Amino acid sequence: MPTAAIYDCEGPRLNAEEKAFFRDVDPWGFIVFARHCSSAAALRAHCDELRDCVGRADAPILIDQEGGRVARMKPPVFRAHPAPAIFGALWRLDPEKAKEATHLNALLLARMVSDAGVTVNCVPMLDAPQPDADPAVIGDRACAKHTDIITALGQEVMAGTVAGGALPVIKHMPGHGRALCDSHHELPRVSARKEDLRNVDFQPFMALKGAPMGMTAHVVYEAYDVARPATLSPVIVSDVIRREIGFDGLLFTDDLRMKALGGAFDARVRDSFAAGCDIALCCNFTLAEKKESARTLIELKDAAARRAVAAMACLQVVERPDTEPLYGRLDALLKPVMA
Image (cartoon, rainbow, N blue to C red; front, top):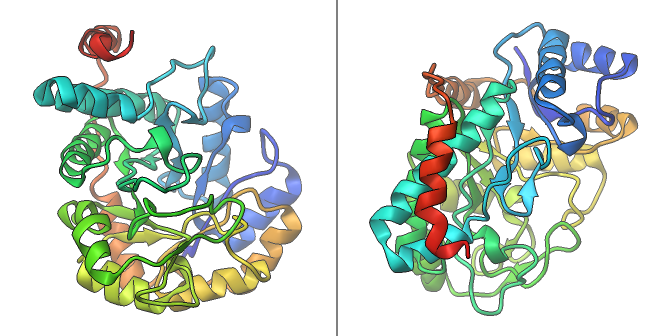
């Protein structure tokens, strides 16, 4: 039984100590970053090597390939894709063309990552940005400000991702759009009333609650839990994400190395499981930090194992036609908002 964790390796390829660690710990999956993506061949070789460590050819491998400023596979080696906000701009001109472009863009991103051996792209971001939110953390990563548009385009991202041969992850639950600071650097606190959160922030997640995978936010929602961020809060995970939103997919933590969280790494892992998260996302840990985090890892079993099996069952074997005509169509659709 694999452990309920996702790790990466520190360098562009695995070293002997990391291989031994992964063989011993047997994480459920892995995540890759720009340092692993010098070429499609290098990334595929790295994915093969990671899977070989755990002896599972189907071990999931994640990436954050949103387009715009959040992209691990970068030009000039890989094609640049626009930020999500571009599709919201197109919606204002033509909603139907915006939906087509969003679906096509997600499909092409999924083809890009899946052709290189990656199985999960951590999109769509369903956060609804509010006027005073920190633009550095959301900004053009959000496709729109209105929840109906976020929902409609988020649905297209999910469908396009699956059609391109990868799995989507809705994030950051239950909504990062009111954060006044960047959780990579400090802990955001949201003081909005429950009613406002339910009527705005939760709405896209409720509409797309059937997603196979989701990711938490490192944000304190004071109306529900004044002390703990969502990732570490049993109240948020059980009462809000699982019950109120109704999400029953596989739930990842956001990156547990982010500075929004305090304490030792093993405590972060332990507390995320105690809160009800299914998988601990341990990004950019040193080998020593990996070993520390592993002290409180648990096996992926029971409800979490059921959700993992159900999520991976959504991965489809897809046809892989030449993408050039698809990029041509995408460029034509986006021309009015890319000038």
